[in-house]
Length: 112
Image 1 (cartoon, rainbow, N blue to C red):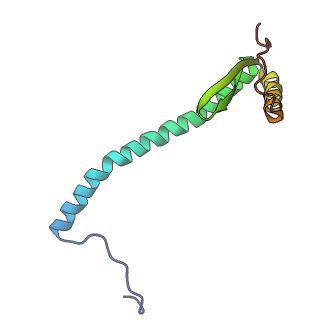
Image 2 (image 1 turned 45 degrees about the vertical axis):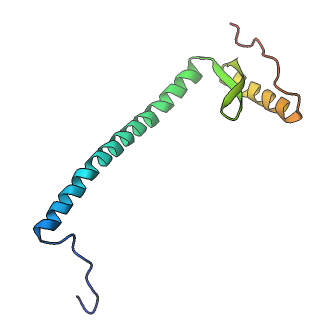
Image 3 (image 1 turned 180 degrees about the vertical axis):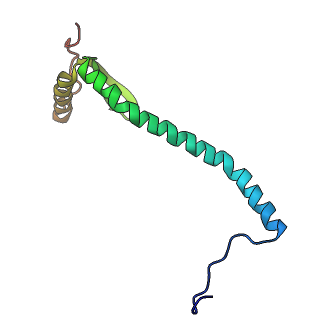
């Protein structure tokens, strides 16, 4: 105690039983720590590669697929062409659904 302030507890203790308990907890915790580290490395790798993959799709003209879902099931999908064409087509489909017209017919934008 320093100047009337109690000191916090200092770990498990100094006896051998406390050491055994600490080793058991460490053995139990190691797999969780390793899995957490692997998941963190995988997430960082995905976050590192995501901009490269998106840039490749945008700049090299890969076709984008737009889809309308009901819950988790895909009700309608269509290849929409490049980045700008897919953005316009998404707005067209969303407006048709908002008006209650239903899903639009498929267009042949990406037939080339």
